[in-house]
Image 1 (spheres, rainbow, N blue to C red):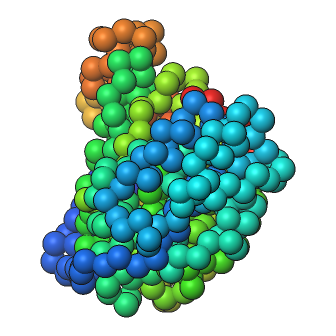
Image 2: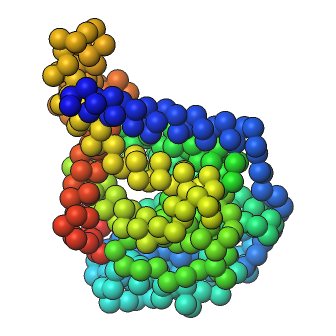
Image 3: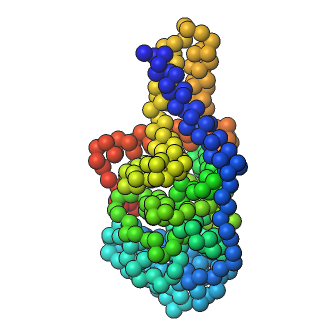
Length: 380
């Protein structure tokens, strides 16, 4: 039993973390489908859902107003979801300058976004988080791919700023996104990137469908264009900046929320898992958004089975010792998470890897128990 458990776990993990990325890279390299780009200035509505974002919202609105984009072609809509910390009052200072405030009761982010889209006038809808700051030319790069009629959505490039107070979780998160950015580039080159990040993405207004509660809104919204037969591509030059995670505990809570909602969103979009309709994208979605989030189970199987096979040979001993060393580094990363040593990749990456997989385990538990996460409190 331990033998089959060990090798099934090994095969699953090798596919998830090595073979699948290799397939993505080869497909993008051998069979590229670059989108047509052209300088465009369509009417754009930037939509920001905010709940108690007083520390960030003023800088966010000023950042949007300072973008290198024709002012007459840009409107900014802040959907304030029951904010009671002064967020509304801060936004009201800008309402005379292309900024609309929707002061809503506490309805949840999905409903707030749906209400904002209903009043938006842009042909292109851009969605952003309150703490994401755009590079000056981001909108130009974000809308340029819409010159291709097959492109229905564009995912921007989220980059993390260094924050010495971010700790080991922040360092691990930053390294993770460097790897993920490369994957997105080749996914997009071969057809579709899997989904967009909420910091910066855009879709054609005609393709927007109401976002249901209890799912990851950026995933549901961006993959909706693929479900309607259009492409979702990655624009690496459309950059939004965010600070890395403030602490391991905060990042863990955020990951549990995002993964719980993300798994529900995959269930919502389960038709995209049909390879007869969506081809290679179905494999991408299953491998990246399902297998990777369930990788905690083969990891646990490997942790249990390898020591039981110790007497069978050197390979199993190396597997046991390798795991002990890796999880030892993760534990050391946790102990030193608030120090400069803990931010080094040798410790930060194992620590972040374990943190994310622990969050996946709790998220799966949430799904099994039917626990939904529709609302949460902002913590900056």
